[in-house]
Length: 270
Image (cartoon, rainbow, N blue to C red; front, side, top):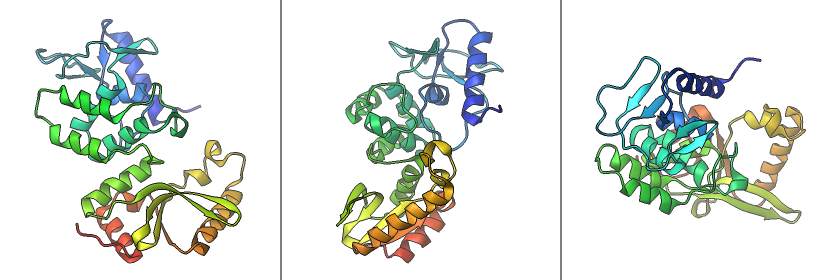
């Protein structure tokens, strides 16, 4: 069976560990892969290891050396040393695109039962991210990381929702309530991705994977999942709010999401 992108990158990480001296501490994207954090974007070609601030040279053909402080107590995953999860998130907050780092932080801040896939560690608190961020001496990427922490929200339900919120921030869209429950006479309809009560508007991100992937279909066929979603949306509309939906192509485009939200009736300032 062919490996997917996550599995191929993890295979490269393990190959680097086997081909080099013991004691390499994997960091940044490599650590994120080992921690099973969700990726928005693409994995780098070369796995990354942290070598300390005073290291000279060090990068090799098989890996990229990052001149960041070595962690006092690296964690161990599958026999490999790795930066702790809070440190991994802060490192990427300083160096990765905002949509990438916010999606990972959202995932790590979520309650354990809400994570998809399950992260390999205990719940990460915002205070832990702020404390780790405060330990960084360098100003490189500091403001970007602080913004990522400010935007991160464990109530976000998926990377697509995380990306949408980053673009909403850029556009100056009023902050929505995340995963708000709606009820009717038959009980709980469900939790909506975005809710703007002052505008009577529900926003839903459609990644389409829930209609195609067996692990998300929960025993349903694609047709059954589509019908169930249509019935759910009809129930939401009967409660009064308007409902608007968008996909990955719109979520990752500032111009498309701006147009979509304006058409739905939201004020956009960016």
